[in-house]
Amino acid sequence: MTLGTRIFTWICGRYVGSDGFGNRYYQSRRMRRYGREKRWVLFKGTPEASKIPPEWHAWLHHMTEKPLTEQASRAPAWQRPHLPNLSGTPLAYLPSGHDLKRGQRARATGDYEPWTPD
Image (cartoon, rainbow, N blue to C red; front, side, top):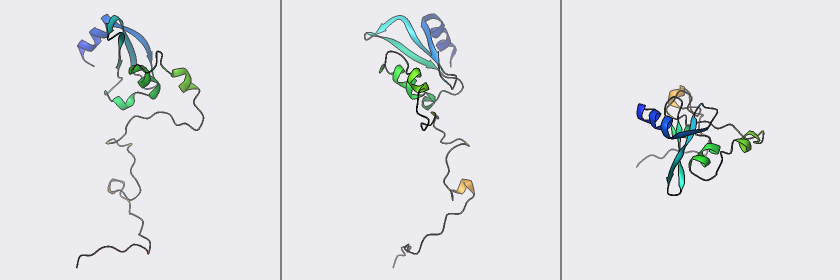
């Protein structure tokens, strides 16, 4: 977050709420753009769009008037919590046999025949 963004938020922004990742969400106090207020997020840590949970994404993009945090808190037990994109991080998913996991791929079954050029 730059100094300019902080000053703009301090002067023109109205705090709306925050999510479980520590991101803070704001909307403009008076300025109307195309008949609606401007909405933005101040990320905690590295700015990464996939860190925005679905309930706040809907609010940011003017799909809902209020954030859907109440509905998200009543999510079914089988629903997993939101995770940002972990590609390129040490927590990224690596299947068994991946070179970075230092594993061996399972041997192919008998129905596999490698192609060899004539």
